[in-house]
Length: 449
Image 1 (cartoon, helix red, strand yellow):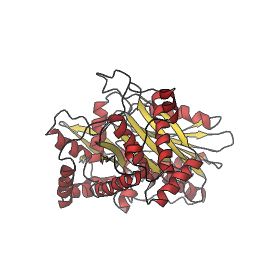
Image 2 (cartoon, helix red, strand yellow):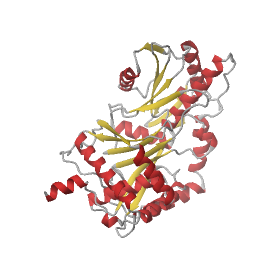
Image 3 (cartoon, one colour):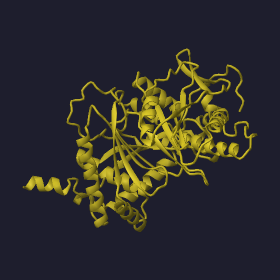
Image 4 (cartoon, one colour):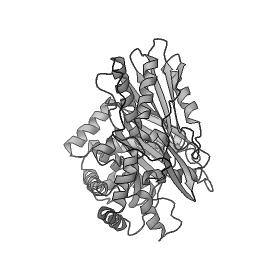
């Protein structure tokens, strides 16, 4: 969709959530997201630059800028300008981290006409290489970064094969989402029904739980500095989990959600609480092919019956989650605002977030891989990311944790306990939650010795 000059557009609901985070953690780079693509072929770097600029021109989210209209944040489109992209020569893959860290440390000025993204191409001595893109969350989410990588690689291949005429008018416009799809939803019967559903789910407010901290965090709620600890699930255990899920008709996501929920229930002695989980929030073909900020959060309300078996509990979570997903478009911020009418000082419904990202980002016929870089900030106490973004069959669990609450030893202990719970469940599918022990065998031995 063409934008008329000087037209102002409201922020979408996902963007509003990002702007609120930006205000709460003012002065930080919490909303920088960074993705890297490593290409395992010799590269024509001038054509790669051209492919990137074609991709930027063809996606209007890159041309979005923001201004205050009174006290309201609005957005507008500027005309595309060619983006200067630097090429850095580096020795090997280990040097990419330095590029990512330097890019992510950049603080973007929201109310400015400067670009709120940056791209760096890197070149290895063998003439292979790739690129890093860092962008503000107001412009894109992680799905959009995957789209960007695929489009760049596709455009590069077309240029490499002599097809110079590949520029086209934007097929999938974020402006269409702003003007049509979201406005239509907000004034629809579906919106009213979704609001009624979430009012029913949160007719009362559950306990706000977390993993206990040994540090005194009083007065440090607005700190978001964080570290990441990454653990690889062994192929043997990964196979056992997958087989267990197949045999018991449980998705891998609901398996992990159930395991972490059981731990949180037991460590907090709580049977009614919320775990946050990010959702794609792209409900049709057009949205799945549109670059921009769509991602939202689903507050999954957990009810734990200790007399249930693990499989019964997991299937109950799956059933509830499926119902919640039917109402996923309703903004999480609206849920909070409605609840704050009852409890004005309610900061959030959850402190622990669990994301599950098993995706394939490669373009067919081209050998490259992608990765997402951690930006050193975290809005929740702990964010748990279960990852295999290149469809390798290997599963990593990344824990992003606030450093004013936890240290690496805390996370190490936490993860070992999770593995212990998983092994107990796999050995006995009919194990009741009551009989699941959150302590590792080593911890138990130390108590009785």
